[in-house]
Image 1 (cartoon, rainbow, N blue to C red):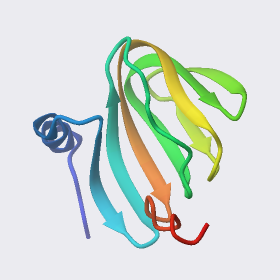
Image 2 (image 1 turned 90 degrees about the horizontal axis):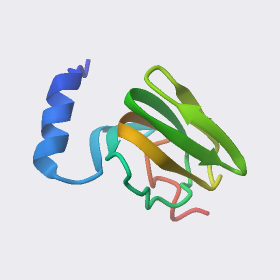
Image 3 (image 1 turned 45 degrees about the vertical axis):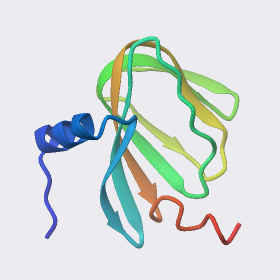
Image 4 (image 1 turned 90 degrees about the vertical axis):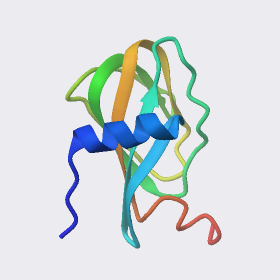
Length: 111
């Protein structure tokens, strides 16, 4: 078993000082905490894996393949591999749990 506590993940993320902090990686799944400050920009590019975002805290908008959605705590958003997506209009610091399947960048060399 691998178990994590959100408070520990948040502390590790803060100590790292970057937007993205991966805390779990196995071949078929990876997970991380992604934080975008209020008013911040999201520099990510499409990924070669499917992903799911779960909003822990904050509020803003997500753009996925031409669609827009307001997100807030409890929102869950699925993004298919290769779909252009980004967060914008971040009203409150966004904390997002991100699930990649298979693990992030594991398909990068095959597509």
